Length: 318
Image (tube, rainbow, N blue to C red):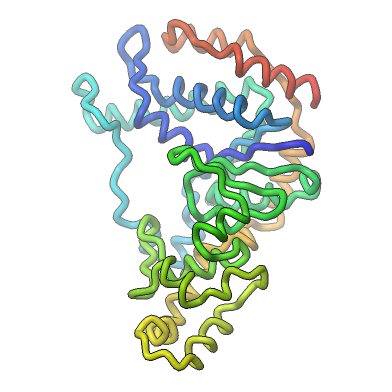
């Protein structure tokens, strides 16, 4: 079976930017660039993919969900380096991060990698749509992200690799770890809420409690919110868990709309753009330009021989 890896690009870049201490030969932070290339090399070694798709959050990518909920993702702390870097001001650090992210995109443009970024659209929706494309129906899809939202997309041919924990999540493991089938994961998380996105859940109804008291969500049947509410209304238990869910139906419905990726928030035109980006991609591999960029950016030595081997194979098989 052929394999495509679908990378949550900003998730990958920020991990490299925050953690990798690399400096250029003139003392400028370049960990976001160098670390992203290192991560890509590790991912290709692990997965040996036949194709690579990198998806970025578009400018103002959260607009649709913020229109539905003005507090969506509110209160998140600014992204900062986890160390004091040569007395950089906040503005200098921001400009450096923007430059590094732009530069990573430029590096990837010279590789046989499909890159997708759509204005006002989050990467989550694009990744969900990519996994549903007919051209990949018989392929294994490996989503690369630490975001739990992607658990709902896992099926027989789709898995999630979470780099920070080095764990591969497939359908079987999700059911074992969470007691919830992927087809019901968005519903379970809508009840639980998501603090990272500022989406409060139902009090006393975390995923552990959900798996114990709504154990039917572990089955493959795609349950609706109304069916869960009906179950909670008809149970003989006096636990607040059940009454809280009934009383919080509006919250659950709202969270579900915000979290579900089964029907991504993409217009017909956006879906068409994604399909064309994948199906009409020209697999160029410009190694000369990449080497030129590393010299311009003061990389010093870049150990990417292993990555080159995999990218050469992808380019030759396009």
